[in-house]
Image 1: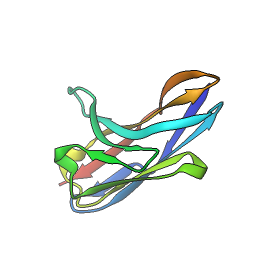
Image 2 (image 1 turned 60 degrees about the vertical axis):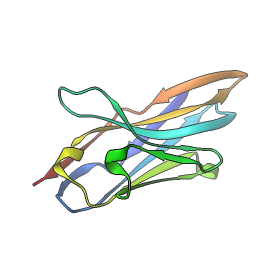
Image 3 (image 1 turned 45 degrees about the vertical axis):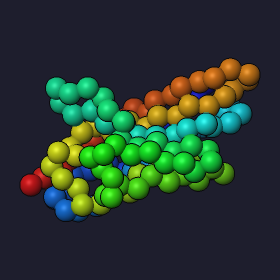
Image 4 (image 1 turned 90 degrees about the horizontal axis):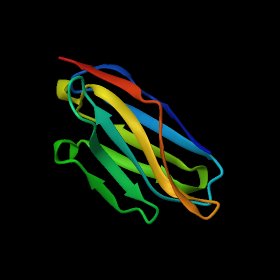
Length: 119
């Protein structure tokens, strides 16, 4: 089983910054992608950013130029640096991990961390 533990959410004023972290542990042979999704009240969960094992990154248009995703492969950890935060970034942020273990693929989700941006 694979576990994801997130940290770093909180309350910040508009224009401020937060850094989210997510560490994966368990029976992992390799990690293909790690990423962040978010879900605001009354809305569907949406992709924020994803990074591959090779370092390729994709971002939602709404966060390009403000958020940066990075990863430490040795620690199976992914980070999301969020700058110039806006009230519309308020959501529960979920870490996502796709990889391989014991010859099979897995997808794991974190428990979610609340990010609230006040105007």
